Length: 476
Ligand code: G6P
Image (cartoon, rainbow, N blue to C red; front, top):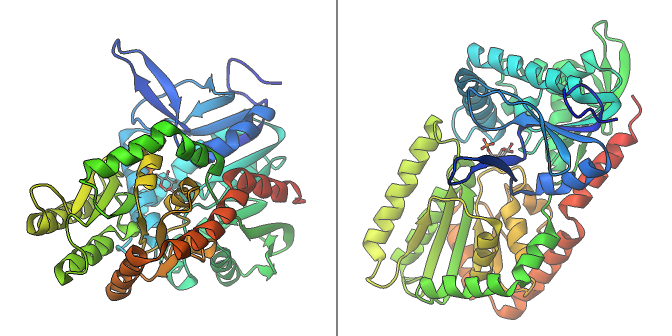
């Protein structure tokens, strides 16, 4: 039974994530309310939440503010408060300046600080305690992502009755890189509190299994791990599996059919001065996304005379992200300097080379942009999945458009009919862009049809269902 007042027990399905799936909106009179955040995760889990007695434990995004639990959109929302110092040490520090760069192939150097690690443990404990307080006896708990890797072990210690799943949304690095982490054993033990540890790619799961074998000495057979107690006795089995996440394909397809959205797509093209080719990049402004490589390739194509302003335009949406973290500040400066230099060189009075937008937009506008685009550029240097690539495919029910996709994005495992590139190879990237620009409609439609079938069949609902089915099949 659900308790309506104090958040103590009663919920049989609990999601734990760094962020709550809502954004606060304040109206003109200063009244605050909550809107569901865009994004596939909450879309996929909301129905599961509504069927079961569901609760979501997470941070609401503002520092130094503690909020009571509340009900919204058919689920219990349980805010975990973070002080400004918690944000600095746990979120900007250990999560986004240690783990994020380490897990993304050390594109920038991770920093290792014991004060960050201490706070990471403390905040993971806070999330675990909040979860233990709302989860019913025998409940299923699904912990999300790298910010909360210690939660499974902490939860299992206090609540051995729970069924615990973990999903890592970002890559899990090769052993040779993971090895750098001073607290590598502690992180592995943290994750192995789960019955099922999910990853985006099979290669991520394999990396994890290799680390478990090497640093914990546990027996690993196929995807099964024999977890040991302190005396080295096997006590239970945990599993590591690939469960590639996806998008709400139906929602995107429906928006793409909406006449207003289609009209908006036409309007975008005309606002850009009706170029023959619209190239598009959509990313959080993050150094893992390869935005600089993409802009460099495009600039060189203009310089070489393969593309011309007026004929081709690159629209780059870069949504603001982690704006107080040093490497993000530096990246923004570099991207904006480069865009300014290219536009200064090639723009005409009527047309621009790069239309750069440092904003985030509602999903309707994004679908209009996908429809307006001829060539989508996803050039991540490393990416757990990349849902933008999948959204572009889902939006093109018209089978128009070409996807240039980095082989370093998890999506490349599913979207084999994209033009796959190594974004570090600028000449190859330029070649792929020109191939995309020139590709005959019959060939691009053939590729698009195959990829659409994949995305429509494997949407985010299927992802959550197969993960949860696998988790429920686990015997502790
Ligand atoms: C990635 C991570 C998520 C994170 C999101 C936005 O997709 O896997 O866990 O929530 O980026 O980043 P932010 O730091 O703003 O939550």
